[in-house]
Length: 153
Length: 286
Image (cartoon, rainbow over all chains, first blue to last red; front, side, top):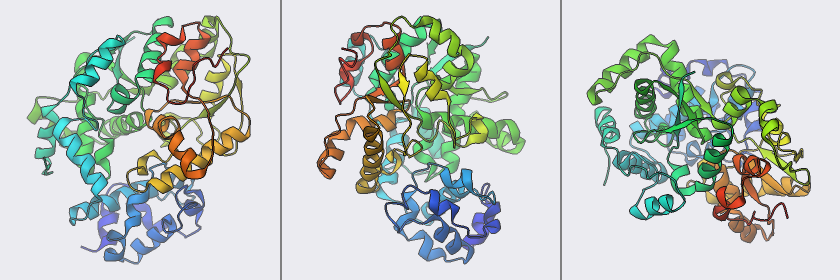
């Protein structure tokens, strides 16, 4: 499927055609200000031109801090933050995932938590009168299985 | 009034004990009963970039647990707040998505009928307790302190969920003023902490933190008050790293808002988890 069609078909992607390239998103992006390779307007433009491989294989789709400034300020109601998420999701579906995100997915899938809770942590908690917390949630793993997400141990 | 289930998320219980301790203490003083729910797991945020549907179900699972217990959710982490709020909103407005969700939740014996509401602890203080009632409890006004507010991103955005203008945020400013401290304006007030890309490009993330700290320090603030555990990792845990990268020496105390409020309530520092703050914040009042 073409990248543009796929973005248009997902919730939050429908408005991408309304972009008139004003660059408010790029002007609002805190990452763009530091590293010009990450440029939301350019990414939107590349999707509109259906440059699938160039978009999905580029590092910059992983650089969104999810701050939402672009989306809040877009005068055309393009949901840029949602589109960045859609692009990452499509990349993952095509087998391209940033190792950091892969690691996060595996941690959450295995334990139901992003950070491992060890006995040491619970001891530290009880020492300051905080209740112990659960270490693993098998139900979460089940939700990964149900949605066909493979977890590496 | 429904009961309030306390949603800790992943980061707070292991890396933000000072936040958790001070929030619990402050809640107690204000007569807010926070109920611990051991079955709450990850909100789904860390998975959203890779597997949106899985992330959605993780959030929905937590909402289903709260509904079953008959309570609403109060959060400490801003990313948990936005993720859970967004999913709750979608489930309330999109019957097809609700059906899809329940089809999956059924497999783990859960169900959603009326998605519960989700509120960040700071917003709960502002909306439900109110500035006046907070002021009444202040025993030791922090008049000698000048504090910069850091709202972070997911406490305010997407703004349609929270009803506060992210371009002119005011709730945290007012909450700080209620402690007696003076609020200082600074140019980079709305800048993101960079935490979400710390694992993607540390240089860029630390450069963002440096920008924020420079701006705050430039206005002569005694400290930065914040309300999200990941923002605290960027500004407190990693402040020394920012210093060594940029050859600076910020020495800027980073406080969770409930720590600040706790001080104003006259709660001893030892009960507010100050020993967990990386940049020394003890003795801020002496």
